[in-house]
Length: 175
Image (cartoon, rainbow, N blue to C red; front, side, top):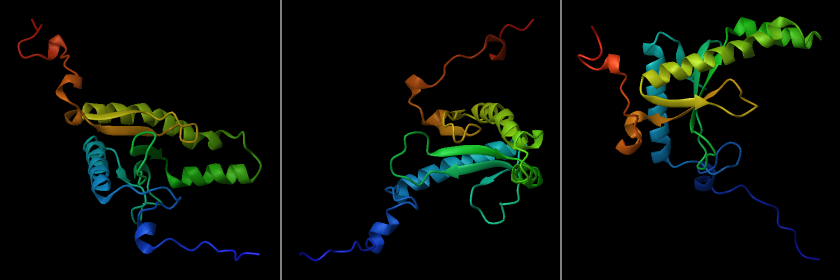
């Protein structure tokens, strides 16, 4: 009978090329572009007066507002930057407590998710008005998240929106 060779941990350079779930990690150059886009998203949301921060930053576990995430995987089936809304931690805890006490139909259980869904369209509109391309997330596991694909200036000129409403043109249809 042959010797069974036990798998060993990949070399350190290979481990750094893998995400925490075992997927190939994006290159540092790609991650830099994604992080720059995430910074633009945070900036645009803050300019609109909304609290926004990066997922995983220190001391953000108890913060409410727009949570911006960057996907570190090399291959993404969707956008590499996403945004979700986090309610006040006390509301989320109340929902968890209600579930744990056997009251899954209590209104508080649905509250954090409903607020996230309501904020979704507002976040998209704020980002679009700042020139950032954002759309609804179609993942049933994250129904209240939005996806961010880039900025309008990232698009080739042939694909950029060219329509300007007549009333917004200088000297347009104003009496």
